[in-house]
Length: 120
Length: 165
Image (cartoon, rainbow over all chains, first blue to last red; front, side, top):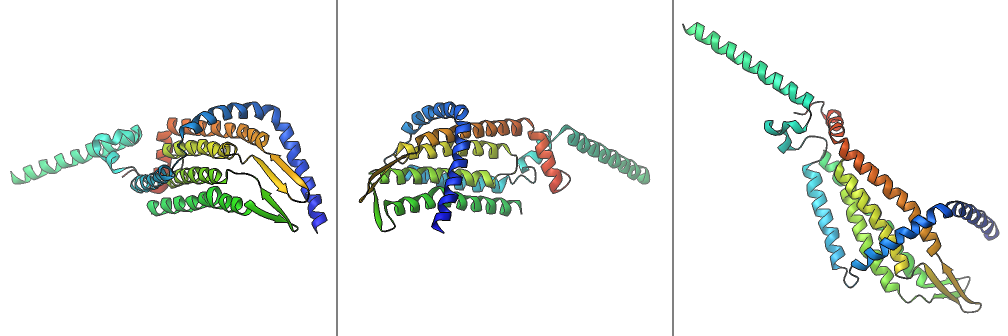
């Protein structure tokens, strides 16, 4: 069993080695450049207290929960559905809404006229 | 309904990331500290384990926080794109922090045989190159989400209710 496992590991190592040696000439220079900026960035991160990282974690969770509860993505946010700000949805939809509003005005005017004539 | 689904996804992926970036590495390093193979004790002569564990915890927490924000955000939203990009960059820092703390050059002392040294830094360099391509992909996604924001929103809203009422 152990011998079989060693054979398998050898084959696995050969495959990984082949992939790595194929990718190495392209990826290694890019990786080396990545490392230069990462080392600069890592110097900025404080390494004396984990409190900062815990605080960042908590802030991300709280802000994420609030933002994604209020704006779930399956309906437009309430502040965008007001008439004045409806333009953010789409021009087509806005036109539709305007047409409906115009029609309702026409009907209302007709109703008023009818009522006036009845009274007369 | 959307809120519940978003939160569930966020919590689920936070759990996954906490396990893979913090708990498993932490347990592995603790286990590897005093390892015995076939009765031969292998003592790792790496002195900076505390530093390694510190960076694992620090970046693990930040990656998990970003994962929560990312996975609880709506599909193809700009905020999801932003946090996916931040998460990838943090992943790069996390992986390189292993090297920074000395974990990519591990020295073993096998009492009856001698010393063994393994250098993973070249492999990490290669991995960073692959990560660079992932960053490019995430930047492209973010640009795509930003440019096609209106279309994506309309598609999403129409899927839900058909109209924007």
